[in-house]
Length: 453
Image: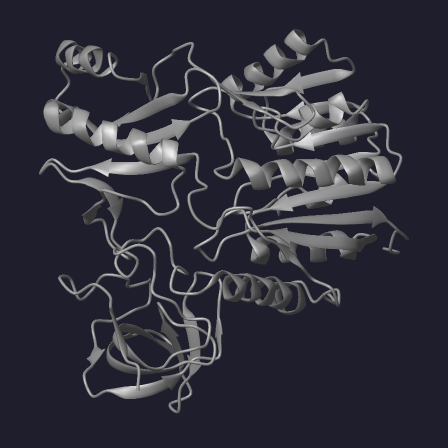
């Protein structure tokens, strides 16, 4: 019988604890039957004790012997286990660090299995959290490349010379020499950065984190450094090491002004200008599919005006402007809003208003001014847009397009919009993050009957 072991937090038994956990650990082994994979990437089992068991590194249908677990309020978490009966979709992970690195939690599943898991996560979020009927054809659009797709990575710099990602459930740094999901050009940048950091040990003394980012156009390679908290203040010393590092690639420092920006191209020929402090999706190929679906959806609904909330550097809003719509882009990060303005000027786009303000502040103002937009685009961070869905409804748009990276907060917000008279008319997942439990979703709502109060 095939048996595979999975250990979590070997060196530090308390790794992976959550609020409410205690320090008890079960030693006698027991067999768990994995029912499904839940948000967070862990397998779920219903235990004879009545508790819920969470088991990382497992797949639906598998049986696992748990030899060590931690206990929480009503649940247990496997810290060490071995697979007794593997699922048909189990594969050998393409990364030797898959069981300990905190980055990818589904590399032990083949790609069709990953997509089925994400489809089930989305379906259950809609039905359980949103109390909505999931469409019969609820699809997750696959990524063109299940590996080698990421255009940016965030690595941590240890003062012991380690460079890599945090171990699963801890702040211990896993020294990484190769990342299976990094674009080959990004993998090369990671190698170069490692060489430079090893040659310049002072770098880790002054900086604790680096975001490595690649783009199709110069500067193709960009490194954004975050200063180490509590490090002795010596600007001249840190600047000397930065000057040497800048001879190898473009460097930005968090909190310091600079004129650096990278360009990404959409299929429509337009640009997305992304300064170091602005957000860009990690999987550009899948991002362009979402943008195309948004533009086509706007055309199908014959909308002429839009409000883009959480607009970033204009990833969605600029594409709508190029498609002939007029609209307002709202983004709280000033450098991102400035980048969108620059593209509007460069491309001669008309009908654009770009505001560098908080999304809720902008919507509340638009409600007071009785402004109207035919389409509202929501692309919030993982926490969702709970604080403004009520205000959005007061703007009375004909349609809402909601782009989300978290199916649970998406379902919660969709429920609130449905309760305010909107009808969910379409939803589709996009596998932005192969190898992990994460994915993006685009949901469409139309304005229906406003419920009586």
